[in-house]
Each structure stands twice: as structure tokens, then as C-alpha cells.
Amino acid sequence: MTTLTLQCHMTRMNDIRTVCVYCGSGPGTNPRFIESAIALGKVLAGNGIRLVYGGGSLGMMGAVATSVLEHGGSVTGIIPDFLTARENALTRVQEMIVTPDMHERKRLMFERSDAFVALPGGIGTLEELVEQLTWQQLGRHTKPVLLANIDGFWEPLLALLAHMRATQFIRASLSIDILKAERVEDILPRLRAAASRAPEGTRELAPEVARRL
Image (cartoon, rainbow, N blue to C red):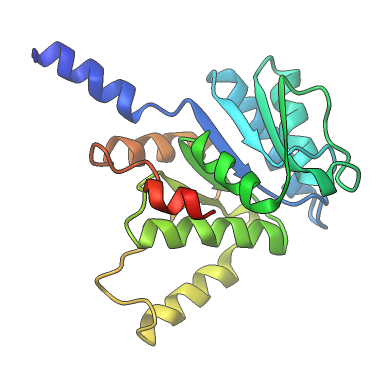
């Protein structure tokens, strides 16, 4: 393989083409939360990156997806059947996948995404984020996972993780590579830098794990 061919191969392997955004179905109390969702949608669309998200049209979810669409980008929504009415599925998206349950939703969100970003959100956002961190910690994938720490929203979680490490429930041999960005404009550069460091063949979920979801 020539040097040029190798470089092209590595570029394709580490390229961020799709980003999964976890976030709340409500707007939160801080106007900066919605502003950050809108700004991230614009960044994704402007860089030709497809958004993968939970499929709703309300709150943070609706803001980021609508922003991608309004700036000419592409969106894949993945929503379980029982939430289509509650979260008012956004029918304008180019692709809407309705799953029978949450497990299938999370599996497809993983498979269709090259990286993950957690904007402010509630228990559902936290659960999806922690699952990706768990799989990463156990060596099941090396896709970048980033906390969009808007106005310090994720600081309590970061403090809890530090406490877990200090009390040795997170062992030194099991690293957690959590990316963090306080500003939306830093999100994509940090995802791309992390993806470029990922060893070949380690970004996909192990097949036996995917089958169990």
C-alpha cells in the first residue's frame, strides 16, 4: 500500500460522517441550552455531517434537528413506537426509523453514528450517555463521546466520576476517555481529533454485544 493510499484509507476510517446527539425532550431553564442545540445543528449541517438523534420535535431534540434541517443538513430520527406521540416525532426529517423498543433504538443509534455528543438533558440522556461510556470503558468501541458542558451542566457528573475513581470503583486499568467542550465551536474539532487517534478496527461494537441489545 502506497503512502498516499494509506493516508486516504486512514482519513476515511477516522472521518466523522454522522454524529449522534443525546439531549432532553424539554428545553430546560437556561436559554443557552436551546441556543447551543441550534448552534450545534448549524455546525453539523455546515460540515455535511448527518445528525442521528431520538426523533422528537420538542425541546432540545427538536431544536437541534430543526436547526440541521433549516441549514440544509440531513437528519436520521430513531424513536420507539410508544414515544412517537409523546415526543411528537419530527416528520420533516429525511429518515425516521420507528423501533419496537428502547433497546433497538439504542442499538441503531450506535450503529449509525461515528461519534456521540451529550447536550443537557434528563435521565434518558444520562442513561444513553453512560451506556456508551460503559461500552467504551470495557473496550467494546473507541468512538468519541463528548459532553457539551454548556454553562457547566455536566459538572456534577464529572465530579461523581472523579469520586468513583478516587474510591477505586473505576479502576486505573479501565480508563474513561470523556471529551468535554464548553463551547459549541469546539465540539467537532475535538471529535475529529479523538477519532484520528482511534486504533483501526476498534470503533465498532462487538457483534456479540450488539446481538444482546
